[in-house]
Image (cartoon, rainbow, N blue to C red; front, side, top):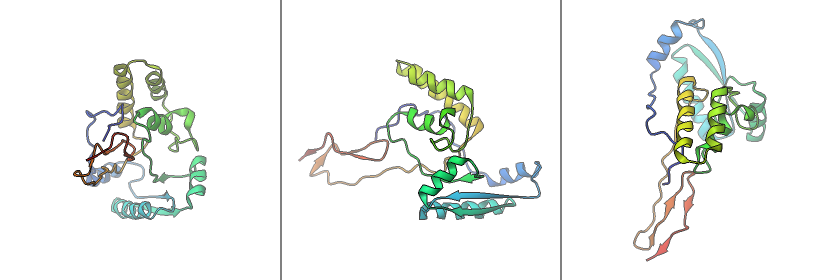
Length: 193
């Protein structure tokens, strides 16, 4: 598949470490436990993920209630910023990092426009604006790398999974079938054998 421009292959992989997370929590003001809510839409898949997260966090004395909403109402409620945590599917529907990063992290998109974490960082805004206005790919990549490094440090979102898209087809009959970065089947260059 075609990679998304702006992806940084050098970012470290963050491993789940519930033991370390529990130790960190023990040294905070919530060491005796905390109550929080996790919002999900009406997706069965996201509800399953929410239940798994609830079980994992209970081991760290985090009492997580799951609140499920119909999708349109869910998006409206998230836009108001009254949630503790939420699960949502999102993919780069273009092959450029600007769409995903700007939508989720630029301050002009806080709330219903897409930045549902209500994340605000002037350095991220500036780097995104610089990347958007740059005319050469090297400068754009440098600015996106800056954004990635800030987000890695501040973690306004915690991506849980990014599926690898697979496609099966009969290569005896077709050539040049591809999946793009958004997961769409591309038939532009398909030839029949």
